[in-house]
Image 1 (cartoon, rainbow, N blue to C red):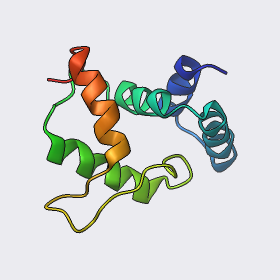
Image 2 (cartoon, rainbow, N blue to C red; image 1 turned 90 degrees about the vertical axis):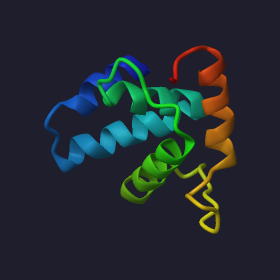
Image 3 (cartoon, rainbow, N blue to C red; image 1 turned 60 degrees about the vertical axis):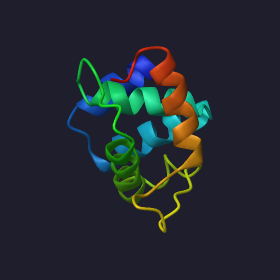
Image 4 (spheres, one colour; image 1 turned 135 degrees about the vertical axis):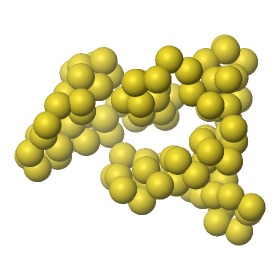
Length: 101
């Protein structure tokens, strides 16, 4: 199952068994960029805000909700907002590609 197929599946109404199967698929990719791209695709927005506070806090909330998918993301909770160095690296790449704005 590729990331596109996973995105399509996540948009559907899922029972617990389906959720577990999809989480397992996402985790099997072991690709941080792919996980973030998948989450952005699920937002169904044409453009994602480049506001760092918004992005980091959103992914922090997602980690609380889906810790098994976002296990690699470590957040510093002593900053002004929840900050992840790993996310910042990916967001910088996305900004340079014009995907955030």
